[in-house]
Image (cartoon, rainbow, N blue to C red; front, side):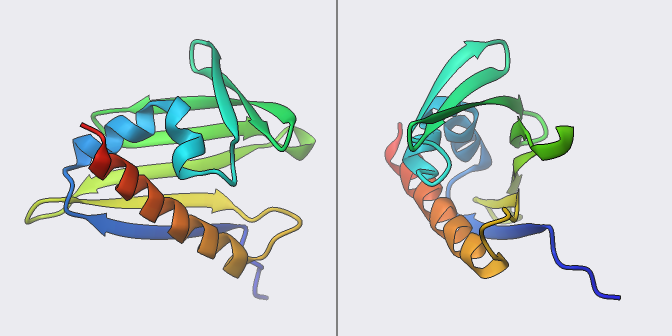
Length: 134
């Protein structure tokens, strides 16, 4: 029995060092700039909690960042009390630069190829944003 995929993962490589990518990701307020499909605005409301607004609808997320592991996770309460969201990993490449991986769930109104296309654009926008930040 073949199960339908529940998540989509995409990766991109960059000549930027991992710390530069991580700095952009760990600043949650940058999310609307590289992930406009996820957030129009994001506001810090306490500790690791943020209020995201998308298409006029607010929802809360927890943003957990671990600099030594190069991880940033945007997690929200889903249906039936489950938790899920975007899991981002930044790893160094052997000869310099970084590899960035993002994994997200496939929503009930989307399909794997639609989500993959969005993730590829988000990774490109993230790298572009990190390139232009000093």
